[in-house]
Length: 255
Image 1 (tube, rainbow, N blue to C red):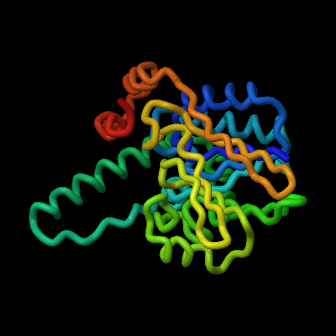
Image 2 (cartoon, rainbow, N blue to C red):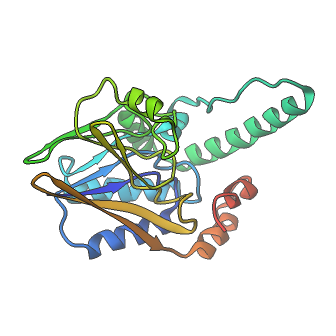
């Protein structure tokens, strides 16, 4: 059984297309899990959503499964990420600026989406994935941690006790999530925890699109972490074409 893992597209259509081309190159897969953070971030949220609709039509909902992440929730609910309270006047000024910047990007992204896109995102929120792989055992999928799309408790450098606590209420053998934009393959007690990295805004291999392919053979799960070059200069130039708000924000994530 071959399971493809996609996460954290973040509206980067050029990276998404490069990643999908690589997926086609590796041959047939049995299941594709897309683990959230789909539209918010880069320059082409609507195009990414259209491609997701197309992929579900192509593969079918039983084979191509999509769950939402924290930034998908921001679009749907207009919530902000948690920001600690300001402790002085200088920090207050920075928080105000950060909130204005974030609101502009969320509103710009939402304005690019159709009702069908919005409804699609709304239906992905709060979901998790689960698969019993014959001969291997149970595999679970989530965005950040099971039951919560925001924490970084299952990061590659998070304390082991904290990471194990995040999995405490779930049963299984292999745990798969995104969110941190950092590739991970980590043993946590009875669990193996995998993060495929980010398609659109990688922190592990900046300017590459990341995804992963897991091949199950009996008791063994072999993980192929894939990194795919894409035309970063074209994506950056696209900011002017689409009148992207706060280009400096996006430039922090690509070089």
